[in-house]
Length: 73
Image (cartoon, rainbow, N blue to C red):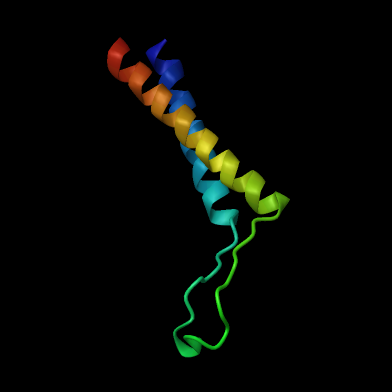
């Protein structure tokens, strides 16, 4: 059982890294235009929102697997 949890942790960790790497990088602070542009509103569209929620879900699964491994060992 512990070997299965270890393998699942590795799979979830790799998926988490991939999901984080494909998320778009957006800069919210532009030092050259303070006060000129007003307040920027960042709105997530469905692909970004899906990746964000997938990241949270994978983190939750990874933490649950880590705790399960810790308490079963």
